Image (cartoon, rainbow, N blue to C red):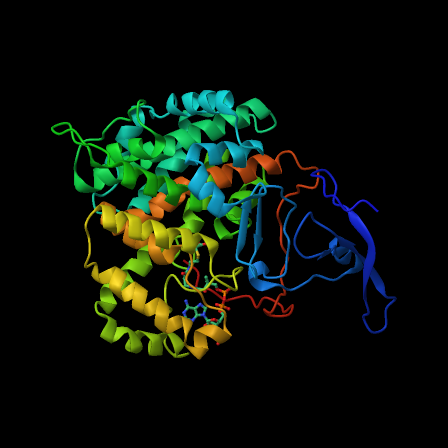
Length: 442
Ligand code: CMC
């Protein structure tokens, strides 16, 4: 028995699950095995037998095979291509991680320099894109603007968009990694009425983004290396996370053969919600609203109240049933940034530290395995750096673009990829006849 999963065909084990349905022959379902993680029951034959499975939120469903990212939610483990996230966050930079996620292995020095050079030389966007921004109201949420302009890239860069050509797919990935910081910074500059600042190829990826965000034509902006490193780390920690809602949206859109820029726009839309990427913005707003530690019990009580829709943002995760490993790195980075900026009395951090303590000792949170997630600390860091709250999810989208495009790329190489088309349990009216209306004649 060969239990190694290849991308082309899932490997069966010698085990089967037997499904007994009264009045029918037992149905044998093969059990598949990945490199790591739980075994998976292959239910593909069920549809032909006249049955669907019901799994809202896909809690128990593996929608694809993937070699990119592995999560063990019980152990708090996150691996990109087999490398632990804490090692990547401390020993690599974001562009190395981009290379790793897309290509499958960390680059050597020569490969890295070539990749970095290619990314840097695609950072400008077509000048006509600038006029697209003018069509948005100044007070538009930057995520609304980013959704629109990312999708619009397909109208500008359709010269190399054969999704079956690996070179075209790689160029698309490079263009996306390179142009997303430019578009993200442009959406911010537009919202505050400042001129767009062009990218600088002599800066690192994170430093260039800070430059495009904070420089003006009148004043030089000097990048603080501690902040540059912190932002780079935030990018690494958000780069991929297996089959989350936004990545699944990209894959679903991509399954129809849609162009990659449109698929990325689908990912951005899905990321926006407060249960997903919008949680960092919601979390900081919540910490600021709580204001002082003495008000925490009031909010804990609200979070527990089933009649109140309020949830503690930055807490809980569909997959992690222990500390989110990204949150641990993020907490250390948060302290580094606040020290560097001599922020000793940050009210949001005070509330966050106290909230974490109280929630981790509260029966409600313990019994439901609700631990701080990546978004619990990222908002405090971004806020200290001077990034406005409305840009938090934009930064998440910028960082996650490499994950989305790596999954989209992988889909094109897997034989098992099919049009994504879930079924449903229909609960509407049974068949009944239309009654003809007798309408007045005109
Ligand atoms: N505050 C209070 N109660 C919660 C929370 C929370 N943040 N999260 C889950 N619960 C409760 C929930 O009410 C339910 O209780 P009960 O069993 O009594 O009905 C139980 O815990 C299980 O929750 P669930 O909604 O069934 O779990 P889920 O896997 O569908 O939800 C989640 C995961 C992330 C949507 C949810 O934990 C949440 O809404 N958290 C706050 C938003 C947030 O921080 N999201 C960022 C996720 S990490 C970044 C990313 O990957 O996008």
